Amino acid sequence: MRFPSLSRHDAWRAIPQTLCMRGLGLVFLACCGLIWPELALTITLVDIGIICLLFAIADLFVAWAVKQESSSSARKIGALGLLGLSFGGLVLTLVAMPLQVMRAAALLWLVASGVAITLVGSTSSRRARASSIIPAFGAFQLVLAFLFLMAHPLRAEMVLHASVSYAASLGGAQVLLGLTLRRARPSRERLTVTA
Image (cartoon, rainbow, N blue to C red; front, side):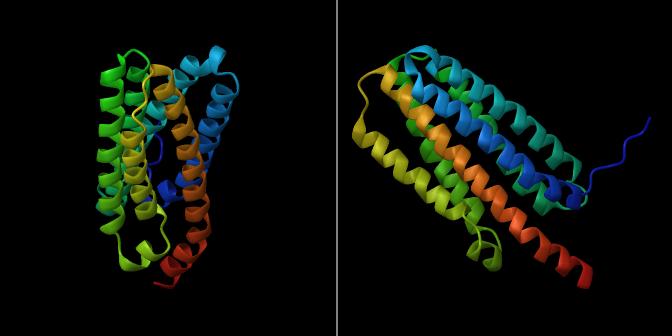
């Protein structure tokens, strides 16, 4: 049985829904970890890491599938997948790290991902930049890195608690991005039809 190939339009039609789904999942899990930190903090981080890795692998497969049709769409979806892959890997390994390594890894990831997100947002077209939250989220990452450096948490539990709180904000940002893309899709489809 042969499955139909995935087109660029199919991918961008599905991305808003998957962003909202994964965002709501992260927010729900993070809230459980924050409400019951003694019982569920480590388990919550592991679950968040697994969810991020699974969705990231799916994003990378989609990016590979649409690469021949649209390299621009493949780059954007691939960047989303790499961000999720790096965050999922960080969260999964964070629970087993000593405090010094944990702090350094979290700070390095915040800076690297903030710079990468800002660069991806700034290389978009002027019209896309005007309606996008991506550059703002990149700047938010860099501000968080500065605040994390200034706070200098002294216990591993504080770093894990901050990671869960960050996962909740990341989930909220993904839901917001998904809703933004969903609102922008009708106008993009009208432009495609008229063209």
